[in-house]
Image (cartoon, rainbow, N blue to C red; front, side, top):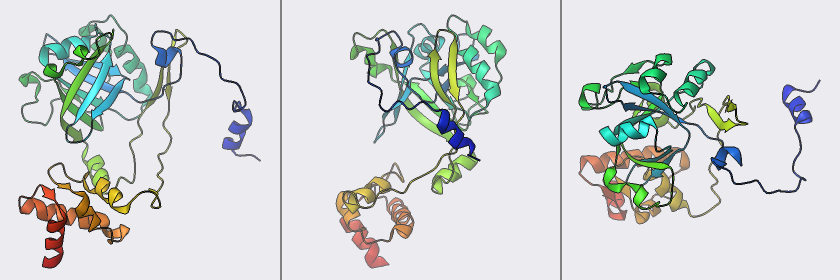
Length: 297
């Protein structure tokens, strides 16, 4: 008897040999003219009355990823979130795992034209103060979602307001500096230990057909080994080394010195070098520093 997966393949339409046809460019083209799949962030912001409001946003992207950490949020210019962030400069991007019972509430949060107090009547999430000093609700910052596995605490960088660059856009673009990344303890340990599991993040295809909002249940994440027969070995080491600590960076010649380290021991060696560098006040690990550490050993 065929497995459920084989049965699915029997009924799945094979489109490989169909011809491509033009799709009209409509408003909200990523939903109405194509298929764009992603997750979303639940953005908490502070309303004028001091209460925390929640807004779901699909169009949220990492913007600066090396040396600086920032996030881009694309929104309607009239949204509550945009108004609140312009007033307070603060917000938090909360990421939750898949829970089908919560999706209807999340949809209600995103319906336009509601005042914060009205939409928060249906709130199914627990809001708590941030553990970060200076980010409590009394400090002019929103609460965060206790149910989240991850939170980015952000400040709107008004001085870098990108509407002066994207002049013809009818959307609002919030360039947010990420001040803190908060993780639940078990997820932080998982990340530091090589990430053997991944959070079950809900997936959305967005608003479609005039009356439907599509979601998908996430499957189990899997991993593939990084190819070792492509590119130079020291480039791969440098990529891994410079992700370990934001205060210590490795140069290319330092990584050349480490190409003989067996893959199984590489992360241990790199962490050891980072520890030595921080103890000695070194922020740039170069060839001479690696050689000195080797001599001392």
